[in-house]
Length: 552
Image (tube, rainbow, N blue to C red; front, side, top):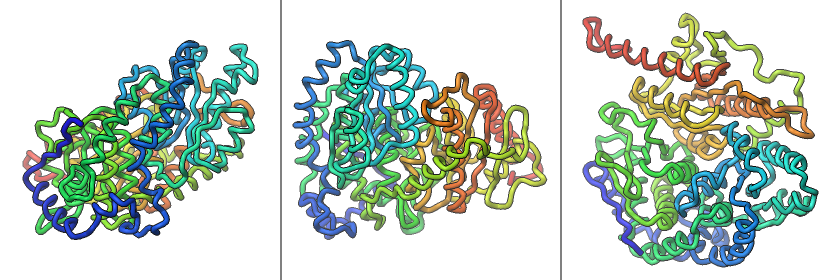
């Protein structure tokens, strides 16, 4: 295997060395080598929770079985994979496809986050193979996308048997989706229900869609298998060191704050998958590590609790920590490091924390069963084309009229060591990232960001069960060409609205401040939001440098 290295220095190194001292006599490396989950409070018979360590070897049989069907699909001209998945399953496949060299347009993830993704799929329907992936049942987004695609295949002239042949389902043994798929005549690939979903990049969830999209997953498994020897029972392996860096930094040290917000610099797919791995694996019991995209990185001088990590050759000349290694090894080493960091934080990394996510989905489904009742209600006010609803935990924005006042009120509710999060139910990631960057500059605090229900589904363990120091901006917008869902009394637009409102309610049940903005013209209104935030930043700078003193 090419070398896998972790390099750090300064205060990060000091924290990591303190953590390694604690790890040295813990027996944790030996427990990982022996697939023993007891150090995290698990029972000895729950060895499947550590089954991800064996995937570089056991997944080879899966790849061998899939080689012929994958070749046949490409021979038949099916060179595009539409993956219906919300959360870890979709993020894993996207990361593996990117790391394995699949063409950028060969895999489309339908998770409800980007309305345009379905339209791109429908334009390539004659070349599309559909993978439906979920550890449990079909999500409401999955149900909607499956129904729309089935109808579109019928309109293309395919019969029932031909449509069934276009679908492949990946799920756990005995899950509700298993029985549903059998009833539809779909091909089914089954996985171990004991394997935590957020540790499943090298399982069928990550490998099958990526391989069908043309990724070289065999090379990735070779790289991961070669990394296993470096993750043995010793205390000097890269996984243990990286875990010590992450977990050691997140704990406050003598006279220094914890650095529990991690900016990840690297390929989009890997960063997206790592965000859900680290957030879910460490978020709990009032603590955790919050992963951030580069867009949400604030000025380091204003955010001493931020730790920057550059991945696999990413430009990180000012990164606190740099991690080098082959792509396949990155998946395995980061999973190992997350388990180590969670132990240092006294958190169970294998708890998927899905209770709140299921409740939010049930809440959205209940709204959709009552289509005659507008779930959102009237906005508190409308500023230009932006409908404003909800308010910060401090009691609202009375006396602060307009969109600027609402944003100022939300920023006021960010604690000194807190953070902001932007969740966009809008086309593409561009508007969300631009808003995250503007808010990071304005507030000086880190800003997490993501799209659709998949973002909170993947990182919600940190937001809901971690320190609970976030303030949330939820964005929805009018989508052109809204589509009805066959056999359901709602449209995709109605589904997105219900999902957004369910997320807002879930956050508010935790006592977290939430501002919900609905953009009637998403492109123009998102640009205006950036201007409002940036103008507020300029006014803050003028007051800070002027005679009137510091801005508050």
